[in-house]
Amino acid sequence: GPAGQALMARRLDASAELRLEDVIDGASITADVVGSRTMALDQIYMVEPRAFHFILEDLQGTRVLDHTVLSFAPGDVVVALRIGRGGDPSFPERLVAYRCKRQSAEPA
Image (tube, helix red, strand yellow):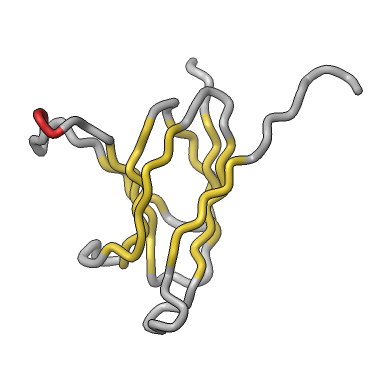
C-alpha cells in the first residue's frame, strides 16, 4: 500500500476534537467532493500524502477553535497538540503542529 504518515493528537479533556478536511479549489466546492474526517484526540492516525485543512473544533462541530493547513509528504510524522484552556479568553485554545525530523536508516 502507499506510504502512510503518522499524526498523533494529545487529549487534555474531551471538550474538543480534530477534523481533517480536503483542501479544494474554489471552483469545485460541492458537498460531494469535500472529504472530512473527524478524529478523537489521544490517538494515532495514518493520512494520505497531501494537504488538509486541520481544524480544532468543539464536540458539536459548531465552533472552530483554531485551524491551519498542513501538507503531508510520504513518511512525514506530525504531532498535534491542543493548548489553552476552554472558556478562558486569556489562554484561548489553539492547535500546534510539530513536524518530526526524519531519521536516517543508515548506521552512524
